[in-house]
Length: 167
Image (cartoon, rainbow, N blue to C red; front, top):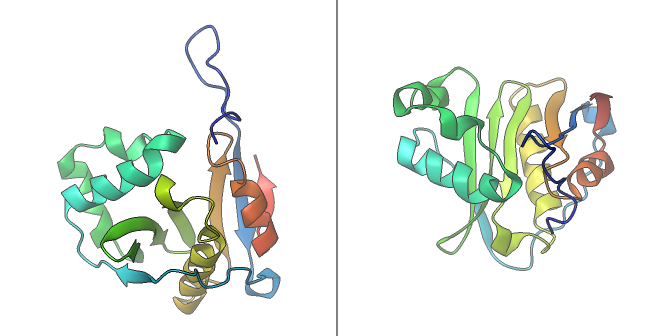
């Protein structure tokens, strides 16, 4: 699952390519079939910093997400209260499946915990994120992925109809 991640260069840095994508409603191809297990999605309107950090860490650590971990609690706490921000958490019974975070017309973060990767939940959850973005009035939805993310992430986004706009 992580074999695609590059080795650090001699200076200790990782070579990473970020691909920025966008989708318009007419380009969206709903691909996700409802999972064969009961996954519920809950919008969390006022997450605590502790909950937010848990979500970000459990979903993002394997893919080397780090930006939000660098923020102090005082800097992180107001983010969920900003205009147009939404946090949606997917669970199977009490287990964290994944989450998506929206800010305006952007899917800021999207992912699954490792226990649920490879179970065809990703495309279904992506459909829910896109659907919610358009329902909130977005005329296009943007997101980005990079070469450290799941090896099928870019392909999953493209199959949904996202088009690369720059990298």
